Length: 326
Ligand SMILES: Nc1ncnc2c1ncn2[C@@H]1O[C@H](COP(=O)(O)OP(=O)(O)OP(=O)(O)O)[C@@H](O)[C@H]1O
Image (cartoon, rainbow, N blue to C red):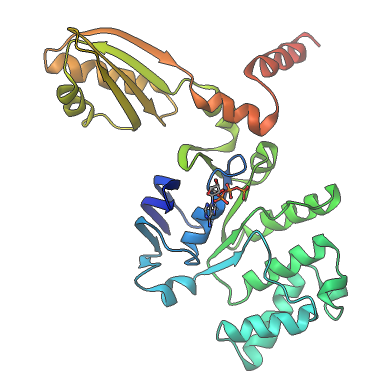
């Protein structure tokens, strides 16, 4: 349904999104999880056609967002981080305005407005000025405008930020409900939130996609080793040739130190690092090159985990063993 292919976005010299690729299937709730500044909003703004990309492609149901923006954008409803609300209007007036801008009119517009007001539970406030509504209700009005036109995909950028705990629960429930009839993508920097709502989670850090998987495996994904360090007697060119045939390598750096061996740091997004280390082993064996040493290491994923949860792996282990003792 959504295909993101080698997407990169630079702001001047700064790479906010770095060569990201992923596929989104129909009918699930996807969470973009990452610390502040990870690049979540930038990716969402590009997917929705609000921002250009430096490199790469985004296709919505086969339509390229840059080449066929009209067809692609009709399939998406978007709530940006700052909801584009007109404070001096009522939700009814605002939804009429947005609906008309989306090409709706007459009976169809009236019916759709009634439907989104019902779905987002804003019936009681529909005739009050938006400026007088609580943050939670303003967010609901923002979601209502995204639903107009019945788009297949709903994209919500940090929809629970700034809400009180009760409003947060209500918006999370609403997202789950929307997931029954739409493909929903939302962003968050709260691990427990995406664990509670999503079918699939994409973890973004420093502009890179560092993990993609089911929420129940998230902690495992974040705490698993994701770097393989090899020492070999092959040279840099040969290493690159061999590793080009190994899947799930997302990054590598090679130190050729002028001695008879070379050290390569290889990063992988595979949830089972042994599948990757096995392929590397056979790749070198096939070419008759010795692997003198191979080490598996956790890199930045544990730091991301700590940033998202405030807990370290040791905290998690001690909580688990406390649970066992009881
Ligand atoms: N217009 C811009 N010009 C320069 N840098 C930008 C611009 N917009 C975003 N950035 C930078 O790009 C990086 C990614 O920003 P982005 O807003 O996409 O992150 P995010 O994951 O959505 O974070 P947050 O949750 O804090 O909004 C940040 O370092 C940010 O400062």
